[in-house]
Length: 380
Ligand SMILES: Cc1cc2nc3c(=O)[nH]c(=O)nc-3n(C[C@H](O)[C@H](O)[C@H](O)COP(=O)(O)OP(=O)(O)OC[C@H]3O[C@@H](n4cnc5c(N)ncnc54)[C@H](O)[C@@H]3O)c2cc1C
Image (tube, rainbow, N blue to C red; front, side, top):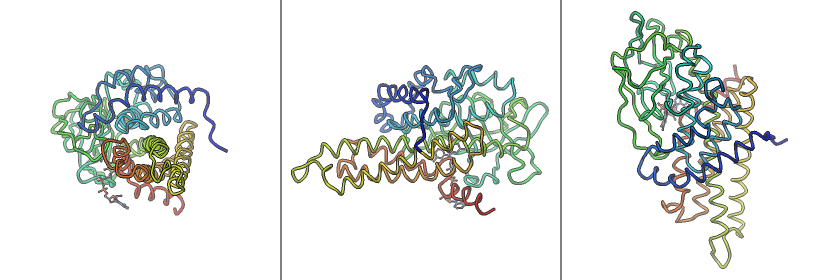
């Protein structure tokens, strides 16, 4: 039976779609071309409640369920993958761990600003020597009195260029090897010894700010330890369980945008005296794209629904991320094929969507890592 959205979820979809078409679609090509973070969108996203979706109402958020969150990310990504990941990383990767692992003081201090857009969030796990393999995290956090002193480097941090609040994973139990020595910290942007370095120039989601972070004797108050010492890896993995559903939703959104563009073009482009939509070769591509999208969206809703009901969802989110990442690359590729030569140019949005789709197979755990997570459940 197809997943039935509630009236509230349908309202969320309509409101975010309307907003995205009116406010984001007009700047999507330009921020991509100029590699420009869309800072002007932040107050607008906040006004619509999109920066506080995972934050309880008592801290200024909307306390939305996970399906509504996925719908919002899909709708933003349908017109612009950059906006989708801005909200996704802010919400799933920084805000979520503070909501679920923060103490009362940390929630009071950080969540209202994250909900209002006064602070954008980011999450720092990846390092030059620790990508898929977080056990080799080399950034250290050495206890010194009432502080932890951070030293090391992170790379590829989404929202890095403008975020104010960072959740950072570092090794605080220096004599405990592997993931058990890791802890999570909330780090404020203006902390002395903390530096955000030059953004990467990327293939896609070019408006998204992706930066390295450097820590040089950066003193973070012990009060900013998130959860308990040694829980950093557990917190990061739980964070990524939800995050992966968000990236899967981003992938569905990008693919949906490309699908709609391909349908419109197929009806309008005439060759051999008829619209190419009349050709069976084109119809088959459209049919395959539609099936891919339905399957991907169902996996996203299933994972998000499990999360909303607080049931185990690592497996479901890994499946959604794996399928939707690869599906988005397939669907956007077919959208270019249907456009022919113009699809390969910047004149049509499918070229940008194809480039944006690829990252959904890589970040928050590559497709290979999702396969490991999934297979492990069956083989242990
Ligand atoms: C645009 C962008 C934004 C990002 N945002 C963030 C962010 O906000 N925060 C953050 O912490 N990180 C972020 N990342 C990092 C991202 O999560 C990593 O790039 C990703 O997890 C892969 O790590 P890696 O790049 O080091 O690749 P590697 O781990 O070096 O992998 C290279 C290849 O080897 C494969 N591989 C590795 N290990 C295995 C294995 N055990 N079995 C099978 N295959 C394997 C991988 O699948 C991949 O194909 C971002 C990256 C990008 C490009």
